[in-house]
Image (cartoon, rainbow, N blue to C red; front, side, top):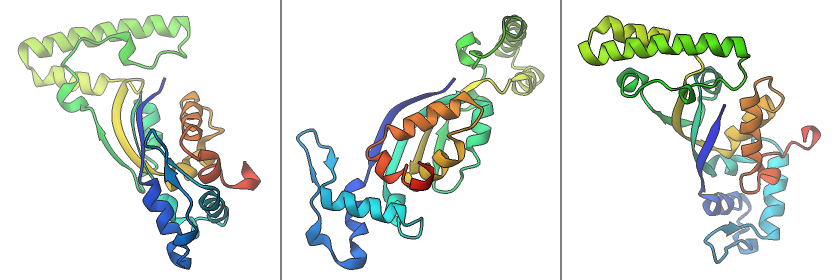
Amino acid sequence: MIKLERTAVMNLENAIRGARNPMNSWAKSDSAYDEKGNYILGENDLTLARKLCRAGSDHRKFVRQILVSVDITAPLYWWKEFDTYKVATVANSTSTMHKIHAKPFELSDFSTDRLSAGALGAFRAYMAYMEETRLRYVEGKDKQDWYDLIQLLPSSYNQLRTVTMNYETLINIYYARRSHKLDEWHVFCDWILSLPYANDLIRCREDEA
């Protein structure tokens, strides 16, 4: 399970203006804001952007200045793979260290959508034990109960992080993960393609499109 919410794309105007700096070609820029406040690339700017993106990472430096912020709720086993992408990413997460005991455990706190019936039954029993341990900790504040919670917490536990990335990082993620065996990566790559001008600026490697 993975949820991506509150997406915001920022700094497109400045990034496109910077893309014209090497040739001092600002007069050819034809982009503008529409009535809803969205920055719309004109034909000249979009043509230049496509050309630079297809020329490789050395030429498409401007996409590193297009920023994306999004709230991602995903299981720890997915976050472990996402943490591969440490370049040009920033994330603030909810804290298991401080808040793991703050609410009762519920099935919706975990990614169990691909469990078999037998595995789901076993997991419910496991979760019930964790809830008993949580209640003991809340009542007695015994650090052993807290350690039990931390070390029993399964990798299917869903964590929320607010993540900021740029389009260059998303290019790398898209081409590396679009065929991954985890369904969460397919949902993530579909989200990437929903971003403004994704087909032009992110899905830009024509030989692999």
